[in-house]
Length: 112
Length: 114
Image 1: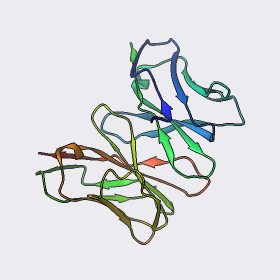
Image 2 (image 1 turned 90 degrees about the horizontal axis):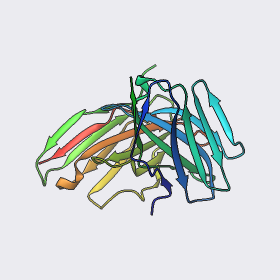
Image 3 (image 1 turned 180 degrees about the vertical axis):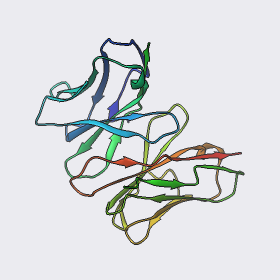
Image 4 (image 1 turned 90 degrees about the vertical axis):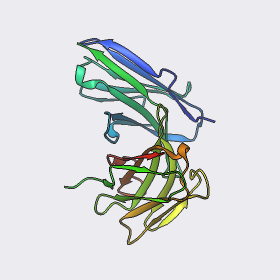
C-alpha cells in the first residue's frame, strides 16, 4: 500500500521550459514533505521541503506547492536546465515519527 | 565536512553467502536510516536507528536481514544466506535527529547476488 505516489515514472521537458513533477499521498497525518534529487550512482540529495502549514515554498528556480485538501503536492522547476535531469523523489513524514516515506520517483529529462 | 560514507561501493557475492554493508554517518548525527533501491524501483525503507536503538525495524524484508549500530555512529547491515532478489543498491542516510527531517545520503552499496 503506497502512501506516497508519483504516478509519472518519467517526464521530458525542453530546456528553458517549466518542469512540473507531481506527488500524491494518502496519509492525512503527514505534516512535512520533501523533494530529493538523485543522479545515477549517487545518493539522493535534499532539494526543497514544505511544512503542512504552508501552501508554497520557493527556493530559486524550485517551487513546491502543497494542496492539503487534495493530498497533492507538486515541484515546479523554471526554467529547466539540462543539469536538472535526474530522478526526483517525493517524500513525506508524519508527526510522531522520524521515518520518511519516499515515493517511487520520477525521472526527469531536460532536452537541450 | 565529511558526508555519509558507505563501504564497499560494490559487492558481488554468490547466492547463499553472508554479506556485511557498512555505513559511516555524518559526525554528530543521531538518526540513521537504511534504504534499498531495486532496479526500476523507488526507495524502500529498511530500518531506522535513533542512537544505538532501532525503534523501527518494520522494513526489514525477512529475518535474514539484521542491522546494528554501535557507539551512536557506524552501522552495519548484514544479509545472511543472500538470495538473488537481494540484489539492489543499499543506501544509508543520517540526520541530526528528532525534529530534523532532512536526511543526508551516502553514495550507496551496489549488491549483486549471482
